[in-house]
Structures are given as C-alpha cells and as structure tokens.
Length: 114
Image (cartoon, rainbow, N blue to C red; front, side, top):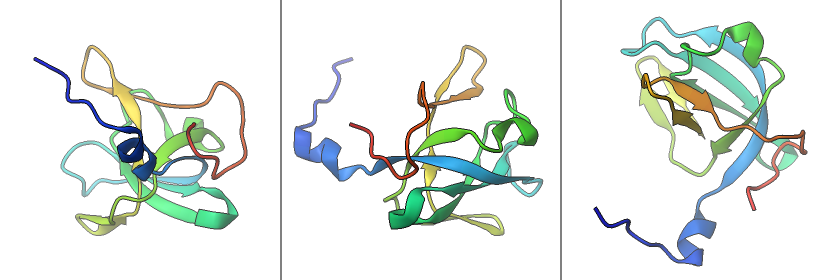
C-alpha cells in the first residue's frame, strides 16, 4: 500500500502542542475504557479537555503532571456526556493499547511540535 504524501502546508495546519495533565477522572460512560483529562496548553491556548483511551498503561495518578502531545485545532467532539476539546496523541502497542507521545524533556506548555 502506497503512503499518501502531504506538503509542508498540510503539516503546518495541524496544531500539535505540548501540555501538562492537570486532572484525570474515570470515564465509566465511555464505550471503551477511557479517562477524562484536563490539560494545560499554556497561556495562548489554555486548558482543554480530552477523552483518552489510555487506561491499559496509565493510572490517573501516573498522568498528573505529565506532559503530553495534543492536537488542539480539531473541532470539539461530544463523547457521551463529555465534550472532548483536543486529541491526545500516542502509539498503539502490539496489544492495541495506547502509549502516550511525550517529550524527552520538559518544554513550556503550548510549545508547538517542530
């Protein structure tokens, strides 16, 4: 299968920003096991909410204070009773569980992926 190519302008339209997880709650109403996250993306973007299916590898306590990479310019999405405002990114492991995409070192909240 051939990979579709994009140009630089396509990539620049995606706002991939770093943020710090402030709060995590269980999301029992979700169809798949998930958490509700509140993430600080810095003064320009502010706090955004997200539903993330990351329960296989992370506990709520492990997520608080972690920096995560999120897409902040998708339109909000209603997931059951929760309105998700960004997409937290990660990689699927061999079991289908998500491993978060995170920076190697801390960077200021709101920093854009370069």
